Every structure is written in structure tokens, then in C-alpha cells.
Amino acid sequence: MLDIALLGCGGTMPLPKRWLTAMLASYNGKMVLIDCGEGTQVTMKMLGWGFKSIEAICFTHYHADHVAGLPGLLFAIANAGRTEPLLLMGPPGLLEVVRGMTVIAPYLPYELHLTEISDEEVGEYRIADFIVRTLPVYHTVPCVGYTLEIERGRKFDPAKAAELGIPVPFWGRLQKEETITYEEKVFTPDMVLGIPRRGLKVAYCTDTRPVDGLVDFIQGADLFIGEGMYGDAESLPKAEEHRHMLFEEAAALAQKGGVKELWLTHYSPSLNEPEEYIEAARKIFPATKLGHDRMTAKLVFDKE
Image 1 (tube, rainbow, N blue to C red):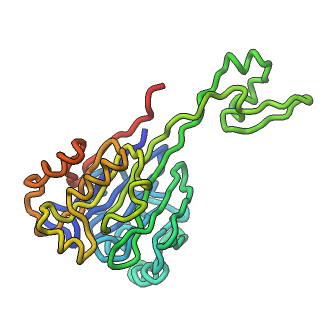
Image 2 (image 1 turned 90 degrees about the vertical axis):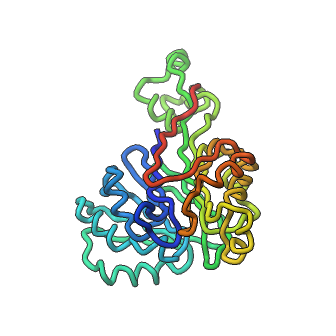
Image 3 (image 1 turned 60 degrees about the vertical axis):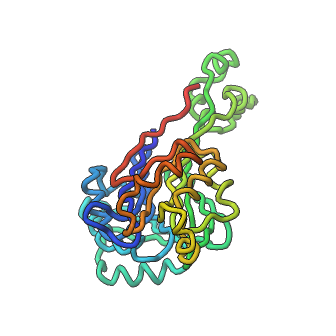
């Protein structure tokens, strides 16, 4: 089971009833956070998933509404008792940003490991059980979108393993796709494992115009958390100028990408009533929902 929480749904600045957009993913006791704007630690505390098991904080870009909460969150993680290294990753500029922000968080009981990712090429990384992929997008500063994927192992056939005379102590290793040589016999995973099975995929992309590659990047996602900075089509010139998206543009990406569900987020502070514009998006992609603070989902593997 992959648990997802949209910690906030605002853009630019936190508002009394709208925290800034960030996403927390939890799987097998490990968590990955994407973006960390002002107040992220507060809405995380309200969510109640804890802080200690965060393995990585991933940044889409370095505007304040996506990074200004970092020093406070680092202290919250420290106060939770973490001593293992914490990974921070993001596009070019990461070292400078982290160096500046940790001036006010200088004494941490864990190391910070920094990974700077390309804003020109796609990337792939492994964090705990998460496969993290990145895609450069089009904003006013270097910016990337993320997908988090959980692989699903092939189904093990114990009857077949017994029939082949494979010793039981080797079964677990074969399930992990290892090839075993024992008493001049070779046992391969294909002997006892079924066909590949579909895993889980979440896509997260804010602060961009629709760009080539986004449709393929989010293809088949169980959940796409996409930017809806502006609700009405009349705001298109503003969206183009500041390189943001409309509700309808995010919905079009979701439809073309064949995702299961779209959560809109990163609303402009001037967008007081997002629900007034949701139907236009749903005409394009019916499985569109308005994101809200601490909105959660439990994603499960397909039944097979």
C-alpha cells in the first residue's frame, strides 16, 4: 500500500485556510517529501505521519513557496530522533540554497547528502523502495517534475518450485530475482516466477506550462497531482507569462496521459473559489478532483 498526502494546495504564499503545495509519500515505513514551502512542518504535524522516517526531500525548484520551510522541517526531523543521513535533491542551485538555509539550522544530529539533478535531461534514482524519476519542465527558473514508482515483484509459484526440487531455503532468493547454482544445477527466477505485474505510480508536477514529454512522463499514473494555478480560461495570458497552468490544461494532460485520477493544486492566492471552475476541467477529464490541505489516498496493487 502506497500512502499519499497532499500537505497543502496553495501557491505563492500560505493563507489562513490554505497551506502551500507539497506532497508526502509513505511506503514500507519510509517517506519521501516533495517540496517544502513555509509552514510545511505545521501541516505535516497536523497530518500525523511523523517526521523521523523521511528518507528524502525533493525540490521541484527554488522559489520561496517551495523551499522556505526547510530549516524548520530539518529541526522537526532532528527532534523526532533521526540520526541517519537525510537526502536532499533538486535541480541546479541546490548546494547554494541549502547552504544559505542551513545558516539558521547549523547543528543537526544527521548528515545532509545532496544530489543535484539535471534541468535538461530526464533522471532516475532509487530512494528506499521508491523509483524516483525527474523531468525538466518550463518555469521561470530551473524546475523539474517528479514521478514516484513502486515496483511489484512477479508472483512466486511454490508448487512449481517444489516440483523442480528447488530447496526451500533458495525460494526467497529466487523471489528477489537471483539466479542460484547448487550441486551443479542452475535455478533461475523464470522457472518459478510469473509474468511481470503492474506496480504503482504517482506523478507530481507544478509550476510549468504544458511541455513536450509531460504526457509520456505521467503516462498510466495511478494519481497525477498537477498544477491548477488559475481556474478560468481568461487567465491564460497570465499563465503563459508566469509559466503556470490552467485547470483545463492540467486536465488535458491527465486525459492524454491515461492517468486514473487528477488532483488539482497550487492555486493562486486570488483563486478564492476553485470549485467554480472544476466542471470545465471535468468535461475534459472526469476523474478530476480539487486538492485540499492534507488530502490523502491509499493506492493498492491491482488484484491479480
